[in-house]
Amino acid sequence: MRRIVLLGVLLLLIFASLAEARIKVSGKGYLMNFDPASIPDHLKVSYDIMSRKCVLCHTLERTVIAVQTGRAPITGQPFDRQAVKAYGIKMLNKSNSDMNRQEIKEIVMLLNYLVDENSR
Ligand code: HEC
View (cartoon, rainbow, N blue to C red):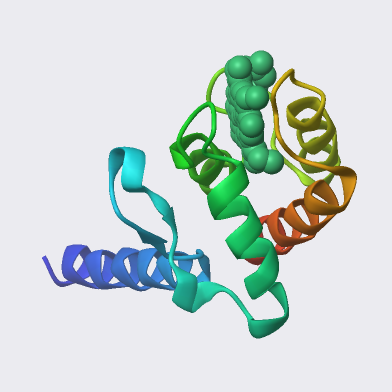
């Protein structure tokens, strides 16, 4: 019995530390976004651009899930640093994307930071 309790406590501690490493998320469904409090000052501008530009065709839920799980939710492809850049360019090249290269650069910087934070 004591062993089981100890194991439970250990598992809880492991989960708690995993949860700690993750970037926090705010809102649900179409309101989902990374918690602004988790964004460092030097990336606030990127966060602002992403929150305005990456919601024109779909909500940020896709992007949040990709970062949190390490998998792009539709195709199931890995979502790592390399993928972040490729997806940035893919989204930029979509017709009516209403974004420019500089904005994609900012967003890629932010997503790289978030991917790194979540994989620590
Ligand atoms: C012009 C419309 C448009 C804009 C703007 C747009 N997306 Fe997308 N996005 C799509 C479409 C359409 C898909 C469906 C799958 C595909 O074509 O890749 C998609 C899919 C995705 C996926 C899932 C890909 C997969 O393989 O599962 C992610 C992540 C994503 N978008 C992130 C972003 C980010 C980040 C931005 C802002 C830089 C953005 N999107 C802006 C149209 C857009």
